[in-house]
Image (cartoon, rainbow over all chains, first blue to last red; front, side, top):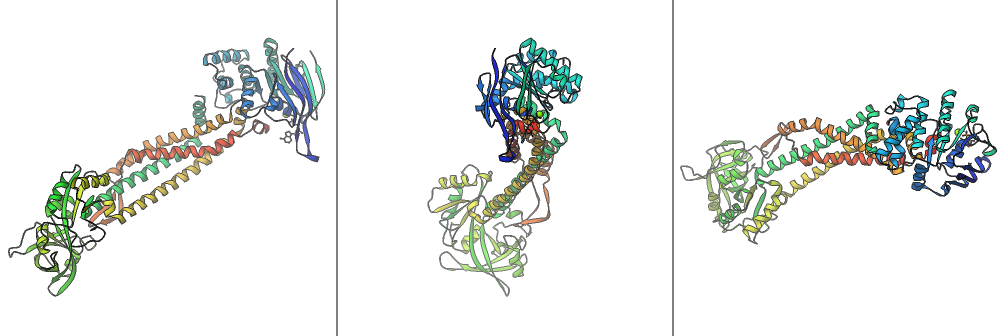
Length: 229
Length: 408
Ligand SMILES: Nc1ncnc2c1ncn2[C@@H]1O[C@H](COP(=O)(O)OP(=O)(O)O)[C@@H](O)[C@H]1O
Ligand SMILES: [Mg+2]
């Protein structure tokens, strides 16, 4: 198996001295290519912070993050930005889309940054949009799409750029439970069909039950790490 | 392409704000174009009126006559010099002049007077002297039936000496040969008002002046006008080369009327400053709008950064969007403002009270529209747009994804 994510004693601390808060506290974990992992834990347990460290959106106080063999904790500026573009797909809880671009243009955005050929872009995005169930809605703007459709466009954008991993921080938190479950089922289908590695956070038991691996955080530490079916 | 698409859509997204921003840029464009056109037109006008009053565009004197005038600093063989001047391309007309201070008597009244010898015909081609308000006929060089030379005098002198048309006037001065110049003249006309440059002048024909002052075929000044006043300095150089006489100095009006020229230049300077102030006001308004919209979109920029957009690309988005508003503003300002500016080139801006420049009433400022007066404001507006977008662009480019995405 191939390690796609590895963290080594990863720590993120806010504040100093007595008021220091360790949002992530000495986390070491390995995620293999093709895993479908949920990070769970109560609010404030450090889920968002951990995903941001893995995704190169934030700098660790200490420790290392290796993504597909690259130590991104040592990277900065342009290089890190380009690394995110080419290797990581992001899905956020809300505000995922650029309001002035259509569903299709949003899904194409990262491919555009990658300077991919227009024909390739169109074809790839079109087929992904169909797979996420948005055929016929390609030319709608975000304001004309539902919350569930927003998240599907975000998934499409993440898939389109061909990343090594897709990180999703509470992607279902703003959706009703059926829509949320559908979204995660869809992500799972992509995981099973194309071996795409997904790491997502949630505190919804219904969503957790769909993960193949469950990492539980408490006060920034991993307190359990189990594989399930 | 993506940048342009995003810029256009973002402009359309906040129609109201874009409209107001564009409007203020259009206004900025128009104000600048208006100022430049009016300034260009009025300076053209004033310079034209001023130089055509008596100075001309280029003057020739003997030696340093201009700085230290003296009866004895004469241009020798003046007719042949005038002849050479007239062969220089660009010269419309050239006319010789003689100047001499004198005392004037009429009845029991006395006054000082400036005697000016002119060639009536060539003077009329060179300056506006023959068109000025006047009682009686313009100087012809003719004599009265009694054999006295007929003169044209300034109205202030006429008033002091209580002179009417047909009255006798005695002038006493010094001749070039050291003799006393002393003659009787007949008033043929009275010119100008008490504020015009002719106040205490006595105009004689060249011939009469040369006889009165025993000057022979000499003069003190040659005034020249050209059809391209903007190139007076170049013309002065060509004339100097043509007459090739080291004892004569040839100067453009900028040197001859140095004080007037400096005043004009200073005035242009102050107009530049007021244009800058207009642009600064526009800039503050636009900066405010751009800053507001970039703050509102902070989360969007954070998202763009998270998914791999470089800071310079975010920066470029804001700059391109603002500059595009600038372009639209210029087009709007041009389309809406041009008819008015063109109208002003025809009718001008009426002055509250007519200004008298050397006896000529000056009651409207005509605008002058040119590539400069319409093009320079485009550069000003675009530079302003660019400068104004720098700070919001820089700020937005520095937004970190975590900052922007945190507050959900
Ligand atoms: N920018 C920050 N400054 C200070 N403390 C922070 C900051 N971001 C997160 N924290 C703290 O870190 C801890 C973990 O937060 P977070 O990663 O958002 O948890 P979760 O996503 O699991 O709710 C919390 O106690 C939170 O208050
Ligand atoms: Mg969170």
